Length: 309
Image (cartoon, rainbow, N blue to C red; front, side):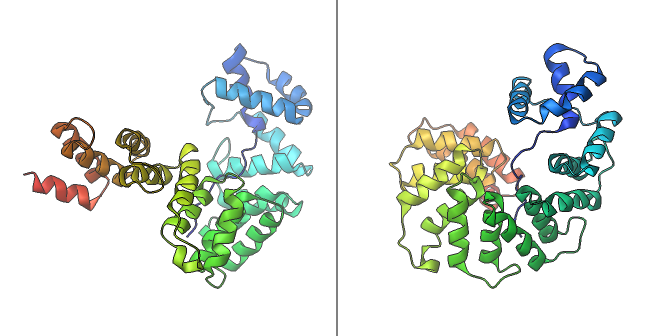
């Protein structure tokens, strides 16, 4: 099944208080409520998002009741941004009791007003059974609606559905086409999947095996923080796949993936240090990486540790 991706981030009205408090100390609730109309402006939204970043991304999980009430009022008046944010509050249990059913209710209202992000969320709900029965065909319907509006996450999810035959007849060419469209919009999972087509699945769609093209897309996804892509970049530098062999760079990317508990990246780091591949041999460091990888269930690391006994 497709892994749910976060759609284009939306600003939470309910997070205004912690953001402002972080910047200038405690604020009067009435001030925030008076400002809400101005904060609908995209410029103010961007400004507050920048403030949030400057605060280290800290927000409160327990959102004050008055802000939830204000969000509900705006959502009931038909404001799609409020509907989306209210849905996310229910999906995450922020300020309200977590409820996928309530989240879907508000995602649906926003989707029916043409919000592509909400359409994608409805597709995710039906694909994964979040608050509804699993219905792959219904998921496809919503993903297609969102994709027609240019939503990259929906395109990537359609790629997965066509590749796996979820709700549609399996079609690798269609999967490739959707991954390519999404990848060109900087969707990191799609970039990873597209790289896989050039490295592993090229025969499925009759294209040439192209390690340079695979590396290009893996690197784009890796730079966005996707652990599997970071691992593939490390592998490329290790085995000279689409890039010149460069073990220090391989280590750099394996470490990035390892920080996200990528078991194979940790195992490869262990191999590099155990063998002293273009780096000083370090038995202890190699064992340490094998242990980390083994703790995540990687059989190769488990076998390597057994062989050292």
